[in-house]
Image (cartoon, rainbow, N blue to C red; front, side, top):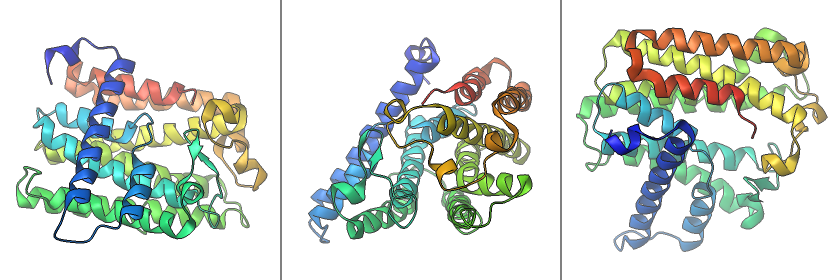
Length: 306
């Protein structure tokens, strides 16, 4: 981490990291466009680019980068793992927006991929971004020991698969006809949203060669902020307008899906967010001032307005 970045406030630091991730993803996709050995369908690549190079906070890759910095990891290597994770996250958004899922027309104020292209290319773009993530991790340009790469592949596969994001999405679909109780909501959200955030934090520790105990501490931090992210998101779905969010709001209530804020009320939810911030900060306490950026991230997630 250079001195210039150390002097930035949190919002500036988030923006700088987001720009670096965007540039890295652009470069990776441009390499595929220039690949003359294997055919790369231009329309599919355009759909992938539309789905992944569309702005946003890039919070998950930010967490990879900052968690890795906690252990003095190679910043270029951490950036590539961060970009791989963003590819997976954007795949989930592309598929989540499909008519068979949430049926959304807007994402970050722009037409969703199936609206800008078509459903078939949206499905294929998501599939391609998911597999591209593992390509990036395994690539020789990602300067890590093969055993570390294997561990990252294992963790990401589990976070994005049946026991993580994909399984959580299946539970989310079931919730439309059979609303879960509080324990069920927490389980669903830990899988659908929390698993990739937990991975982001643990992956940074893995890239940095952290001890098993420190890895677990960062993973637990990721779980705490993952739940915080979902509670804040559900509050915004209840209280924010679509223009501010850049996507349709109120859809959970319209579909009869249970959320923790809907179950317990806004005051309860905001109290829980304060408790989750305290939990996250306590987990980071052994790292001292070096973890200040991650402490700031916990507060940012709980207090975000879009």
